[in-house]
Image (cartoon, rainbow, N blue to C red; front, side, top):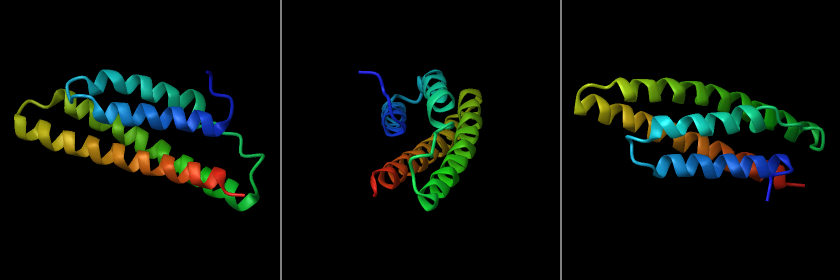
Length: 117
């Protein structure tokens, strides 16, 4: 079934983030491009017309913050790929994991905002 509403797109993005988080660190940078594509095509341009003004403002704020986190995650992924030592790779992997956790939390919060009356 193809997503049709903003919450469906957000659910799809959330699943993609969770799958990325569960991947082995070696395959994360390659899989990140799929997550990034979902975000850029479907999530960042949400239409907030159906929401009350306060909720729409919150959604826009979260989307702005998610955009920033996605850019930082892209940088973290590049650093992870270029890490030479195990200690550096482990530190970069921790950064990636933390950033994914933040994005997952933002998605869950947005879904809650969109479900509230």
